[in-house]
Amino acid sequence: MKKTLLACTLILALGSVQAAEVHCEPAVSTAAFVVDVSGSMMQELAAADPVATEKREAEQKILLARKVLTELFPVTVKEGLRTSLFTVAPYTNQLPLAQYSAEDFAKALEKLNPRLEAFGRPTWVGTRAQDRFNTAVGASQAVILFTDGGFVKKVKDPVETIKAFYAANPQACVHFVSAARTEAEKAGVQELAALKACSQVIDLERAAKDAKARADFTAHVFPENCTPVKKAPAPAVLIQGVNFDFDKDVLTAEARTLLDHAVEVIKTRAPDERIHIVGWTDYFGSDVYNAGLSRRRAAAVRAYLISKGVAASRISDEGKGKSFRYSNESKHGRWQNRRVDLILGDGAVVSKDAQ
Image (cartoon, rainbow, N blue to C red; front, side):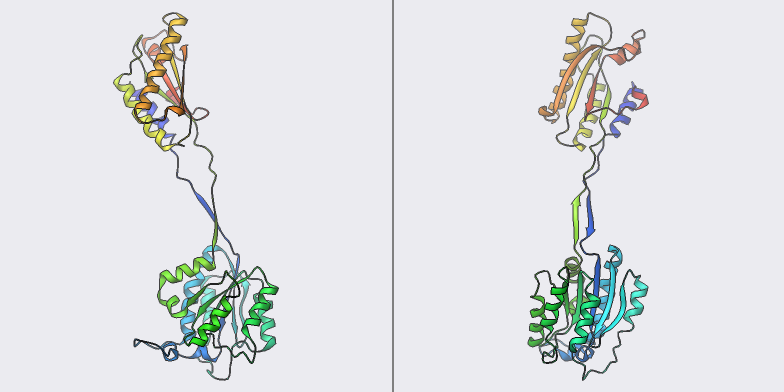
């Protein structure tokens, strides 16, 4: 008896299933970080904020931009993106489009010089810079532009620059990390962001200090396409060990214990999985009598499962009469043949101990 109980327990273990999985892939494969290094970006953020209500340590916009870039870049490594780094005003290609390590990117960030002259270098300088920007950044699907919106439109209208960029690169989306402080600067950044619905804007200082806001921004800029993984059905399981006394169709205490274990396994499997119950007898008695006895044994197991909450619509049962799987010449073999088998799924997985 103990051996049969152990065998059934081993079979039941094969029936467990894992939770459904989801497979996610990056929706973008290329990204360009573009940093405005015009004169206004060399200014201190606190000093440039005319409506600051609290005293805070002054920080250069360009240094805050470097800090945020350091926080954003690891996402591109995790997603396996090809990345580039550019500056505008003046235009410089700091890192061409490729895959980089965090160390390589950190070295490139050191080149963002916080000691550049703050005057005489307006943003978006001339048609030549625009053409270079379009050519170099155009291969990227996600463009993250760090700027304070201090545009000098009489030199070159940034709206026209971004419009031309979108016309040449319809797959791209420009997002903004904004150091804008005056209403005019904020309006300038929002005007650019409004050119395409996918654009996201985050305040530079908030991006530097608010991890949740930065994570939300990152999720928008580097979205993922996720699809449920179609998993193969759980392997079919044959449960044995539900045995009966001679000429009886009443469940023994041991049989009820095994069926309680079976119910727990059934609960872990697909809720619409079919359960087939097959009753057997030993070889004593007529074929007609044993056919009826095997059906009653199967019906007893069906009724027990239903009483434990298994939906009746999932269960089918039948009696097959005499069994010769085990020797009918021995008492133990005849006891093994007086059984009910439970088949979960379309086939059977049987341990050697349960053959």
